[in-house]
Length: 124
Image 1 (cartoon, helix red, strand yellow):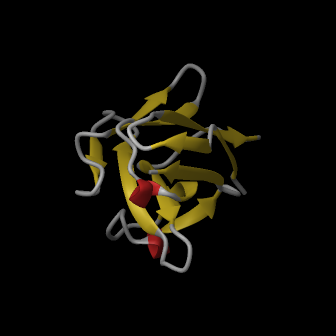
Image 2: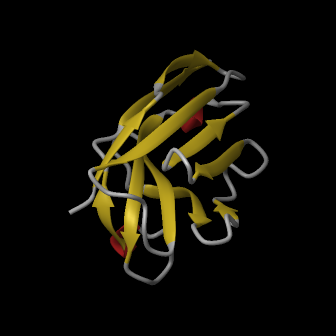
Image 3: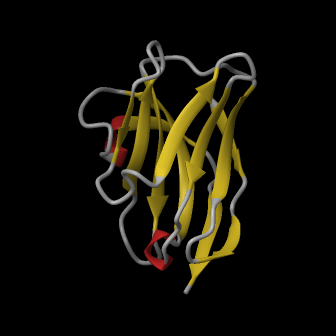
């Protein structure tokens, strides 16, 4: 069982930046992919960014391309999400995901393990 712990959320004004972190507790990141998702109030959980562990190749949802950067520190075994030029529509609970089962990475049903989430609120 992989436990994921996210941190780094907060409240910022539009145009600001935040960096989220995700650390696997009692386990290391393994598998093929890890990813960040978000769930705005009253909406479904959606894929934001993923990274292929072996090569570090990222992929992004169109809504965040050019603004968000996903990265991994293999020495510290930490997953990051650098979020720049934040918009009010980025407001959501953000989750780290691991244990990809195959299928589309941006589909929340493709993942086995989730963190508890960290709240990001962007005001206009």
